[in-house]
Length: 341
Ligand code: 13P
Image (cartoon, rainbow, N blue to C red; front, side, top):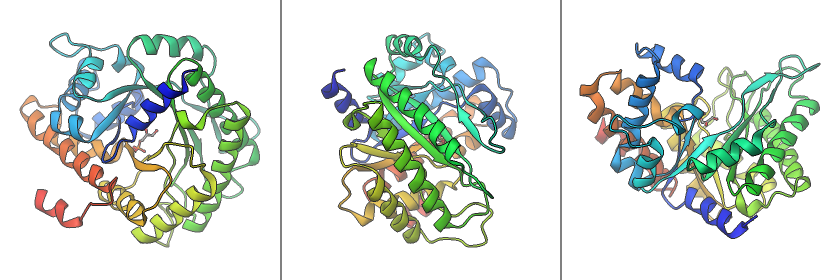
């Protein structure tokens, strides 16, 4: 393992004012997104959509440090024949790849899932590296509800994440370690805190046992927020305070950066929360975004599958990427949103 090289990539992924575009929706998920805007999900439509994002020069060159791709996309070429990976590289951004194979029910644990995909992973990583991937992503999913999560679920998912991370580093690829505590339930923010704490402690324990070098990973956690169906809401300052508290308690300073998922937060909430977190200041890691929905929702809505909307959709991406880039520096202001509207 060349740790200096891995560390350099990890640092570039979380460079000041920049963050990651998660564009790695599986074919089933992107179909759902396209259904919502009335676009048929063909391979060409998926290519056209992603090409428009990767050609959004302003967003890509100034605010997007890396792009997480799906297996289909890392192999696709733009309309003019240029590999999509090259578009990302030419814009000064790093290509990455989702390598997990999705979630499956966890035996004897009703309502819980485990992420699969370790079989053949070393070979897939070697191939992806050849195709240009410099980092990878594996997402573990932890649901919160009555009697869950279980120790079994947290342990199984943390173990798989650590096995994946070790394989990545051995193949010269920076692993994004993503243990996501879902915000789907009716739990309050205190419960999100305690589950997130348990999940992060277990994840770092397993990373240690699998000999993963923390200097060569990027952590992609959830923020500490109340469940979507919770009766109690939390202010941005409360989210920021509790998120920073749990991260300081669980994430060693050797980790170069933390890049949050948006997890179903609205675009503006995801930005406001990231900004409030960075305004606390004096954090031992870079703290930025690795958003899917919170970056792409306005792009999809604006594009709606029409070539005449491409430029406007690119401006929508540039706007959200700029807002989140500012939030990664703790320099976002709500009136910057209004001016653009
Ligand atoms: P969201 O920001 O839409 O949660 O997606 C990020 C991601 O990559 C989830 O794995």
